[in-house]
Length: 240
Image (cartoon, rainbow, N blue to C red; front, side):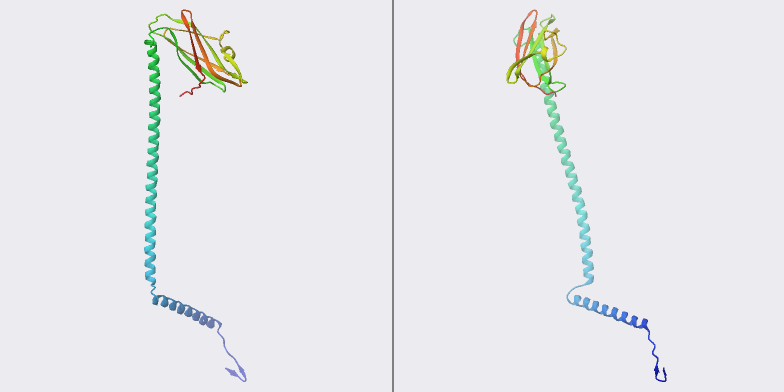
């Protein structure tokens, strides 16, 4: 519209922006179409790629399932191995216990045979067994001995046992009696006994610091029997 020399023009910014945006979108679509056309011409197929991904996903899921099955099998095998190991351990322990019981029964059988029928045919007083066991504290030990006489002897035998421990202290020989290392014994250091067939005697002793025991000398005296003297090496036997 003209008015004299004045020209009035109407501008629409929204229209221009819409045209610019449409041109940009068309350009992008055109470029993408050309890109896809180029891949198609090069042997690429979008549908084939989607199918391939589906197949790979299916393989991944299958491998996951197989992996879980293998883990379960490994866990089952581990459990079976642990069970077998525990079973073998139990069998070995049971066998060891049975062997220990058998040895104990053999010792008891030998012990009672010695009472019923002495090997030397003499039914006198004997020191059948001696043992050193750990005591109630450090440097404490229990001295155990078993006295027997044959069942052929009907009378009760009585007497006393004298125990001395030989060893060294400060590199010098030293001998200890029960008076020196035990409490509750008689002034003469002897342990009295009285029995018909056999008797177990036990005495706890406390060795002095620095004393190294080597042997234990035991003497058994009875009024009507000759004295019995035995010497045993100092060997501490752990209790089972």
